[in-house]
Image 1 (cartoon, one colour):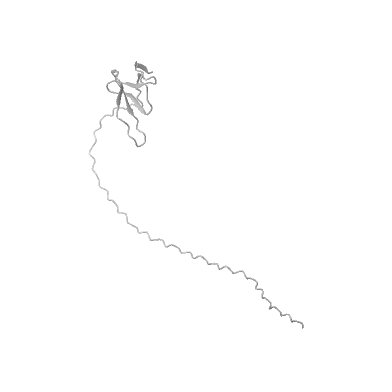
Image 2 (tube, rainbow, N blue to C red):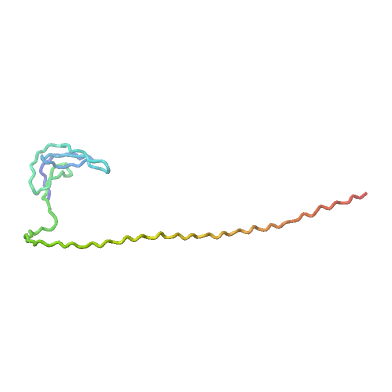
Length: 138
């Protein structure tokens, strides 16, 4: 459970990170966004609390300093006994050189397109009959 250490009532501003610094004061720094780098920390409020080890100090939603016991995760490591290791003789292995195989350039198959000639539509040729001369009557 978290318990309040000091009532400060700092109002948090959007885009800033609020934390308890080494001196026990509340500091704030501009948060990094995208390509933009964050800003240098500034003192938001001077409190001067003394920090104890094993506790995590933070700014709660009311703007006050609270602390909670740090929870450490993971498996506990067993202390391994030191083993005396004998010196190993290093045997050099022969490295087989790989043959460089040149790949033959693949010949591209040339595909000839068949040219299809379109047959011209036959037009009916209408022969004009020569005009007959009318004989004049006299």
